[in-house]
Image (cartoon, rainbow, N blue to C red; front, side, top):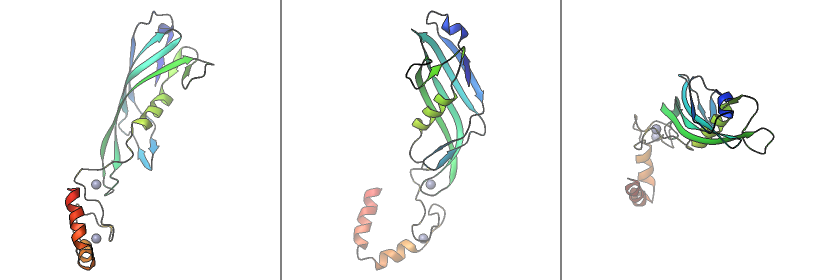
Amino acid sequence: MKIDINDVLVSDGEMFSAQYNGSFSAAEFLGQRYEFGNGVHVKADYFLSKSDIVVTGSFEGGTTVSCSKCLTEFEYTVNFKFTEYYKKSQQDSDYTYVGYSIDLTQMLQDNLILSLPSRHVCSEMCKGLCSKCGCDMNTQQCDCKQQMDETNPFYGLSELIDDEEV
Ligand SMILES: [Zn+2]
Ligand SMILES: [Zn+2]
Protein backbone atom coordinates (compact mmCIF):
# COMPACT_ATOMS: atom_id res chain seq x y z
CA MET A 1 0.00 0.00 0.00
CA LYS A 2 1.41 3.34 -1.04
CA ILE A 3 0.43 6.81 0.09
CA ASP A 4 1.09 9.97 -1.85
CA ILE A 5 2.89 12.55 0.30
CA ASN A 6 3.16 15.36 -2.26
CA ASP A 7 0.61 17.54 -0.51
CA VAL A 8 1.59 16.48 3.00
CA LEU A 9 5.15 17.74 2.58
CA VAL A 10 3.97 21.26 1.74
CA SER A 11 1.17 21.29 4.33
CA ASP A 12 1.05 22.80 7.79
CA GLY A 13 0.56 19.53 9.63
CA GLU A 14 -2.88 19.05 8.11
CA MET A 15 -4.33 15.51 8.35
CA PHE A 16 -4.63 13.39 5.19
CA SER A 17 -6.37 10.05 4.86
CA ALA A 18 -6.06 7.01 2.64
CA GLN A 19 -7.76 3.65 2.45
CA TYR A 20 -6.72 0.41 0.89
CA ASN A 21 -8.72 -2.70 0.07
CA GLY A 22 -6.68 -5.34 -1.62
CA SER A 23 -4.30 -8.21 -1.45
CA PHE A 24 -1.63 -8.59 1.19
CA SER A 25 1.19 -11.09 1.24
CA ALA A 26 0.92 -14.02 3.61
CA ALA A 27 2.75 -13.84 6.93
CA GLU A 28 4.42 -16.61 8.85
CA PHE A 29 4.83 -16.57 12.62
CA LEU A 30 5.63 -19.37 15.11
CA GLY A 31 4.78 -22.09 12.62
CA GLN A 32 1.42 -20.59 11.76
CA ARG A 33 0.75 -19.26 8.25
CA TYR A 34 -1.61 -16.32 7.80
CA GLU A 35 -3.05 -15.96 4.31
CA PHE A 36 -5.41 -13.17 3.36
CA GLY A 37 -7.35 -14.74 0.51
CA ASN A 38 -10.15 -12.18 0.73
CA GLY A 39 -7.79 -9.23 0.97
CA VAL A 40 -7.27 -6.76 3.77
CA HIS A 41 -8.66 -3.39 4.71
CA VAL A 42 -6.27 -0.64 5.79
CA LYS A 43 -7.10 2.89 6.91
CA ALA A 44 -4.33 5.41 7.37
CA ASP A 45 -4.23 9.01 8.51
CA TYR A 46 -1.00 10.90 8.04
CA PHE A 47 0.43 14.31 8.68
CA LEU A 48 3.69 16.22 8.69
CA SER A 49 5.41 16.80 12.02
CA LYS A 50 8.59 18.85 11.55
CA SER A 51 10.25 16.78 8.81
CA ASP A 52 8.69 13.48 9.91
CA ILE A 53 5.55 11.98 8.50
CA VAL A 54 3.40 10.39 11.16
CA VAL A 55 1.19 7.56 9.92
CA THR A 56 -1.55 6.20 12.16
CA GLY A 57 -4.36 3.83 11.34
CA SER A 58 -5.79 0.35 11.44
CA PHE A 59 -5.47 -2.96 9.62
CA GLU A 60 -8.05 -5.71 9.32
CA GLY A 61 -7.91 -8.98 7.44
CA GLY A 62 -9.66 -12.32 7.69
CA THR A 63 -7.60 -15.47 7.68
CA THR A 64 -7.63 -19.10 8.80
CA VAL A 65 -5.56 -20.49 11.65
CA SER A 66 -5.30 -23.92 13.21
CA CYS A 67 -6.03 -24.64 16.86
CA SER A 68 -2.86 -25.38 18.80
CA LYS A 69 -4.67 -28.04 20.83
CA CYS A 70 -6.86 -29.97 18.35
CA LEU A 71 -5.44 -28.70 15.00
CA THR A 72 -8.91 -27.79 13.66
CA GLU A 73 -8.82 -24.85 11.28
CA PHE A 74 -11.01 -21.89 12.06
CA GLU A 75 -11.51 -18.31 10.94
CA TYR A 76 -9.57 -15.57 12.61
CA THR A 77 -9.49 -11.84 12.02
CA VAL A 78 -6.16 -10.08 12.28
CA ASN A 79 -6.82 -6.65 13.66
CA PHE A 80 -4.37 -4.02 14.85
CA LYS A 81 -3.75 -0.30 15.10
CA PHE A 82 -0.47 1.38 14.32
CA THR A 83 1.32 4.70 14.74
CA GLU A 84 4.70 5.08 13.09
CA TYR A 85 7.09 7.87 12.19
CA TYR A 86 8.67 8.04 8.77
CA LYS A 87 11.84 10.10 8.85
CA LYS A 88 13.46 11.79 5.92
CA SER A 89 15.90 9.38 4.29
CA GLN A 90 19.46 9.01 5.57
CA GLN A 91 18.37 9.34 9.16
CA ASP A 92 18.76 6.47 11.56
CA SER A 93 15.23 5.14 11.73
CA ASP A 94 13.20 2.03 11.03
CA TYR A 95 11.12 3.81 8.43
CA THR A 96 12.21 6.51 6.06
CA TYR A 97 10.76 8.26 3.06
CA VAL A 98 12.37 9.26 -0.20
CA GLY A 99 10.60 11.31 -2.83
CA TYR A 100 6.86 11.76 -2.87
CA SER A 101 5.32 8.49 -1.84
CA ILE A 102 5.61 6.08 1.05
CA ASP A 103 5.14 2.35 0.74
CA LEU A 104 3.53 1.21 3.99
CA THR A 105 3.89 -2.52 3.25
CA GLN A 106 6.99 -3.25 5.36
CA MET A 107 5.63 -1.29 8.33
CA LEU A 108 2.28 -3.12 8.10
CA GLN A 109 4.05 -6.49 7.93
CA ASP A 110 6.12 -5.61 11.01
CA ASN A 111 3.09 -4.47 12.99
CA LEU A 112 1.12 -7.49 11.87
CA ILE A 113 3.68 -9.88 13.37
CA LEU A 114 3.74 -7.88 16.61
CA SER A 115 -0.04 -8.11 16.90
CA LEU A 116 -0.24 -11.90 16.59
CA PRO A 117 -0.77 -14.14 19.60
CA SER A 118 1.74 -16.96 20.19
CA ARG A 119 -1.00 -19.55 19.74
CA HIS A 120 -4.65 -19.94 18.78
CA VAL A 121 -7.26 -22.07 20.51
CA CYS A 122 -10.53 -22.81 18.69
CA SER A 123 -12.54 -22.47 21.89
CA GLU A 124 -11.89 -22.16 25.60
CA MET A 125 -13.62 -25.51 25.93
CA CYS A 126 -11.31 -27.25 23.45
CA LYS A 127 -10.25 -30.61 24.86
CA GLY A 128 -7.41 -31.09 22.37
CA LEU A 129 -6.07 -34.34 21.06
CA CYS A 130 -5.61 -37.44 23.19
CA SER A 131 -1.92 -37.61 24.09
CA LYS A 132 -1.99 -41.37 23.67
CA CYS A 133 -4.01 -42.21 20.55
CA GLY A 134 -4.22 -38.77 18.94
CA CYS A 135 -7.99 -38.73 18.51
CA ASP A 136 -9.82 -35.40 18.67
CA MET A 137 -11.39 -35.48 22.11
CA ASN A 138 -13.93 -32.83 21.10
CA THR A 139 -15.62 -35.20 18.66
CA GLN A 140 -14.40 -38.66 19.67
CA GLN A 141 -14.19 -40.59 22.84
CA CYS A 142 -11.39 -43.07 23.46
CA ASP A 143 -10.66 -45.38 26.35
CA CYS A 144 -7.10 -44.14 26.90
CA LYS A 145 -7.85 -41.92 29.87
CA GLN A 146 -9.86 -44.62 31.57
CA GLN A 147 -7.14 -47.21 31.04
CA MET A 148 -4.48 -44.86 32.35
CA ASP A 149 -6.56 -43.96 35.39
CA GLU A 150 -7.13 -47.55 36.40
CA THR A 151 -3.47 -48.48 36.38
CA ASN A 152 -2.19 -45.14 37.62
CA PRO A 153 -1.34 -45.01 41.35
CA PHE A 154 -2.00 -41.27 41.24
CA TYR A 155 -5.55 -41.80 40.06
CA GLY A 156 -7.01 -39.81 42.93
CA LEU A 157 -4.46 -37.06 42.44
CA SER A 158 -5.17 -36.62 38.75
CA GLU A 159 -8.86 -36.26 39.57
CA LEU A 160 -7.92 -33.38 41.86
CA ILE A 161 -5.84 -31.72 39.14
CA ASP A 162 -8.70 -32.14 36.66
CA ASP A 163 -11.03 -30.38 39.07
CA GLU A 164 -8.68 -27.47 39.46
CA GLU A 165 -8.44 -26.94 35.73
CA VAL A 166 -12.21 -26.51 35.39
ZN1 LIG B 1 -9.28 -26.88 19.35
ZN1 LIG C 1 -7.01 -41.82 23.18
